[in-house]
Length: 308
Image 1 (cartoon, rainbow, N blue to C red):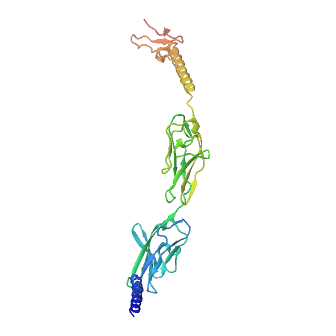
Image 2 (cartoon, rainbow, N blue to C red):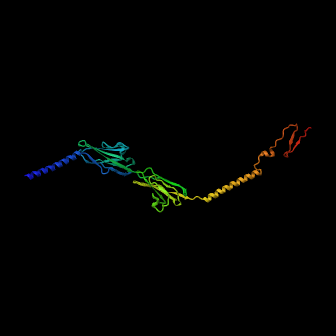
Image 3 (cartoon, rainbow, N blue to C red):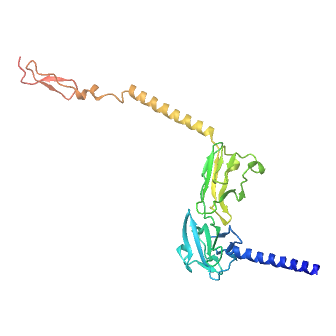
């Protein structure tokens, strides 16, 4: 009899444990979870935001979705209908998942799933989903100098503004990738460049003849990549001998012109017209005698009316 009583007590204790466990679950009432709280999608693809009701007693809970952008919430799903900028691009998949069709870059935001169960002891629960929509880069804008003298500096630039997350940049010369560290490749070991994969700049502190070639840039992120067309950069030497000869020729020409002008002055080619006889002025009539100038320069004779 003692053994039977002990077994009865054990069974009763087990029953109480099961009952208390059941009551504990019931007390939790509405409880949500998600299979992925940080999903991502490429632009123009579809994505499903997971909001699973793990525990609930109410058979007709109220389900809402809100989009939080720059700290400002707005309704996505309210009173049984999709609203806002997702009105024609989203739907609810039972029981509470949100499916976004044809995602755009503006869909990157926090999304909050809220479930209310009025007849449960715990009537409300929510879960946050951080969605990132990745955007493939467009063709970057590349700037390559057409010609650079040996030993001078040069800067190549690559810019892309559409990709998300922000792309990183790669530079290529004659279809061969330029390593970020020139010492990592024997072909670029003696180059004096600095490559910034974040800003897209490729700077040469002193260009060499070997740096000449066709350059192009590639912008790349997790969504894809895009590249600009190749542009040729020429590297030329300074022709010191030619420059010196050119200067000498200019000096000789200037000397010849100067000597020629001096000789012309000495020979009277640039004499003033005041020194010629054409500007001779007849003396005034102070003695009552009229003078007539003949055709011979400086030869004067009296008129026939001359009276002593």
